[in-house]
Length: 474
Image: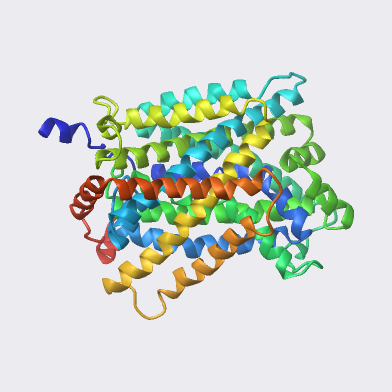
């Protein structure tokens, strides 16, 4: 029995910065701003920065519940524990089931995105290559890194994402220093002629740029003093990326120009950062930016692969699937079987979709992941209200924060399903629904699993961090 416990225990080895790196890596700010700004511009015109501001506010409100949960619980299962304690083991399992789909789909999407961006990078050098080749190489490297100690993966994520962000900031300084195309102005933050409804719709693309901000919560068992470190990591990740998105969305709008011609060029660009780099700094910087987007996508795929593996590990350890899913590598202390499972799925999915473009694979898998993620976020907000009011931790106006988040998240979900999108996007909500129904069948058909999950949840330390003591710590 002692041997089994030893083989199912993760090793605390990370600090706040490394935990934050996972959340930042999943969001992949460079890769996000490589396309999402143009998508927002195609709807809201000049007011791209205003749309991203709405997304920043939404995510800050949404993150409040995740931060509170992370102060209460430190567990690799993340929402599995958060909503499992709030609603019981069945909904806890379904929350993890939904987030598992999200992180796995994002791993498929991001490995394809690596292939897409590297294909673009080589194209600038007049070299042609199919996107699947670099995508599979990236998946193999991610498998290797995720199999080893998590510290190696998080530090790799921190370095590669940090370098790509630095490149984008250099471009932003040059564009803003030159006053953009027509001078600096507040136009990107003003309500456009299309009205506020267009801003609200475009903010969905800003929101999608934050998908996965809660990823650090899956490192709850691998971080020192997790009930203090994980909340700080999530908050720092949200504030850092939020600031970055606001600066870069504004820079892109100013760089292309706020007149009709500039807006049309921005909205029609499939590589806005590369196009701006060509205009303001030349071909060499455009090549560097393209490479930066590639490594950012790699960091995202690494982050989602790590998070998916830890969710699957947590469920496997508590009784779901083969027992080996809940095992830990004796040397590297990694959930190596869960890692192998997730990365095998990603590789097979990319190979199956080989006839599609890398952009299509990214869009298809990413959309499926986001739809499932929105359901998980909504459930977690409701769970936080239920739990923390019952514990007496939330009084007065505090529950209003997740309530406002629920409204904003609900609108984001609605905007993704209605008006009914064109094929194949109209099928994706049904794919997510089928996944949810499969999870429901599992918990209804496996009362023994529910019992095991319930016992595991009841054994979790539910002592919240002492905020006063935490503030006094050096």
